[in-house]
Image 1: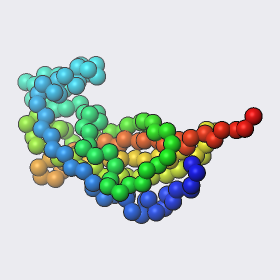
Image 2: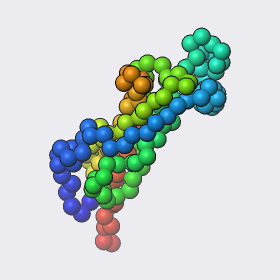
Image 3: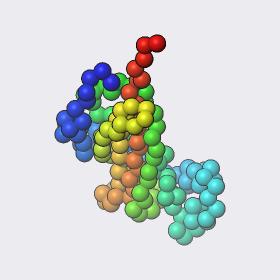
Image 4: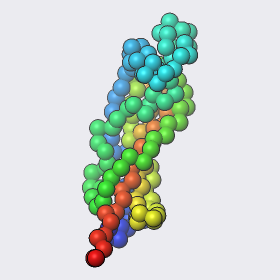
Length: 153
């Protein structure tokens, strides 16, 4: 990167501030389709008639925010790549229950490796039910790898 990013300034100005809100309501068909696509066989995820029917624990990873990053977030020069996902289920998500997903920038940090400097951003969507009970968190990590500098022959 041609200029040094001020990670501390980015953290101060953007971390832990909700910048997106989406509303979801799961249908039994969505839950079964997701479960089957994941190879799930437990009846509580695949049979809508099961007394404990619910979405599989990783379902929150399928929710997408409307905005990728907060307004005013600086453009980070380099090559952007998916750096992984993580889901932390807290309580069951059930069909017909209105859900709200709120997204914020959870962390920003830099590392230097063999390929140069990399900046990591972790966006977190927190999924709540109508009583504001946290049902799950879904983290998405993005890495921006600085463009390699060309070495003169």
